[in-house]
Amino acid sequence: MRGSAVNIAQSLGMRFRLLLIVVCEVLGCANARDVEMTVPDASPQLDAPPAPPDAGCVLTVDNTSQLLTNGGFDMPPLGTGWSVTPANPNFPVISATPQIPAHSPSAKAWMGNFEGTTDEIHQDFAVPASTTMLVVEGYYQLKTMEGPSLARDSGKVELVTTMGMVIETALALDNTQQDTMWTHFSHAFAPANVTSVAGQTVRFRITTSNNQVQPTSFLFDTLLLFAAHCP
Ligand SMILES: [Ca+2]
Image 1 (cartoon, rainbow, N blue to C red):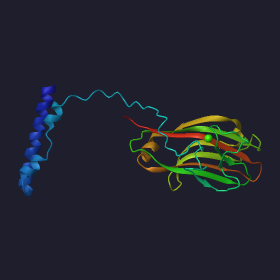
Image 2: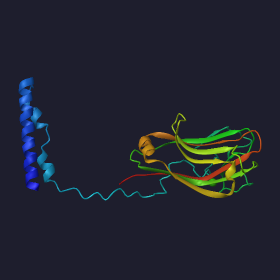
Image 3: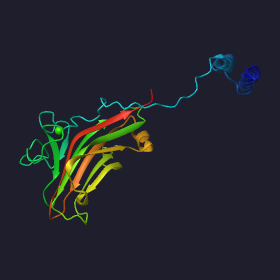
Image 4: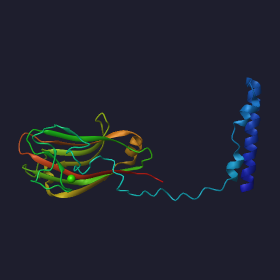
């Protein structure tokens, strides 16, 4: 079988070269031999050792490849790496306030907590070009004065473009999900979205929104965003 494949390929190669020479003669190539030399010969590829069987891509979760700057919010000065809106010096979102201890001491992002407010923290980051898997994980708490039945205050962890267009939501919270302990969350972004952002700069964003009554606090800490790729 292998011998016949080589013969077929060699035959095809010869036919292709002959075809090029004929085309050049008809169309008037300046140098038919130069064109001929650019055509790869199929024979060496067939003579090369066969490729090993595809064992699939084994992704290794490398927790050291943190793509976020200051995902634990603890680097000085407070707020390093993050854009915060609103930036209120009297009630900074990223703080080391002792009322609620941080998951990773000493600071955390404490969003919401005031009626009629919208908070946002974000940072842009580069997705490595070869990325095939993108995962975010971290911890949150949700403390609310609202009742448990109707969703009135909300928070979202999202991957968005640098223009703010949502690519994918990693975590959606509202006041019906009260959780006064640090709770772990993890989200692997959809492969199609990962492919679309590989090699680009995108934005990691957390937003919260409180209605006019009964505030809800959304707290985040120890955020980790990592990419994995095939070897
Ligand atoms: Ca922390």
